[in-house]
Image (cartoon, rainbow, N blue to C red):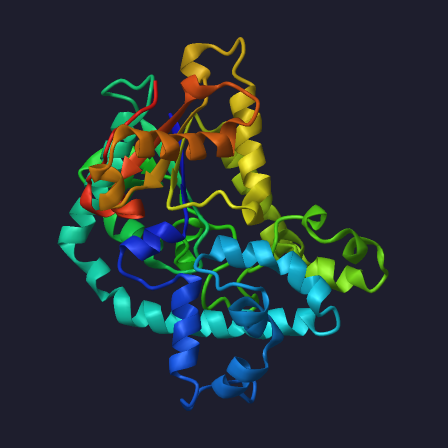
Length: 358
């Protein structure tokens, strides 16, 4: 069986890493007078002059909390300030990458512990056990598609798998094989949006496709520069055969998976192409043999309020999650919405709340 696991920002948040937009914004504000600079510009200059940072903090009309909100506002920003939009996004990305490096250096030491290794393996085995059409002796090839820029997931994978012949297998569970991206560079997962400390590339903050830009921005000649920078795939793959191949490889992984799990991934418009690919696969279930069918488990964060509340609120959470996939289609037999009290942290502490609809 081929298992693909998509990991989003909720995974890092559950590990105690303040990687959300709100935390970055507050860090910049708190360190306004610190002795930081990037390319000769101080953090105070970034805080007071970067037009994208100011737009997201004040001028957009309300403050955002999540990266899906931030990336959803980028099309409006391209109309708000066409002249400096690209330079603003470049500087914004550089400062956010700097912030993530600070966070990662402070927060990831505990990932090296053997206790976390065991809890991570336990959580992964539990995910595998949830898969439909599995037998106890099934060999599983698991691939992690990483929407984060950090190396937290990679460090956990490096500690949990070992080389056995030519394959990386889970320690003490050699029927679970890891499809590794590039061990030599520490990429045990597939970083589809880029990664920290890649000397030749910035991280991929942006929108999913040009249709998300205002119509005027798509037709004026000078907008080509904006399209190439703000559309994530354009920016990441520009004159870069390696990243073009990465996108193609990840697309094939999704197409070939028997079972796909999402963790801490908001399914926002900035990742529309990947949501569409999953939905397209779910739609192609007619006349497919049961053992070859494609199934998806979508894990949703539920805080204590959700779990202490009545069935009505839980059903509302189901409805929201299903609507992101189902639209006017009905393949609910192949889609399960799962709840966890700790968001992506289920892979660490093994606590899964199996509340399935239907």
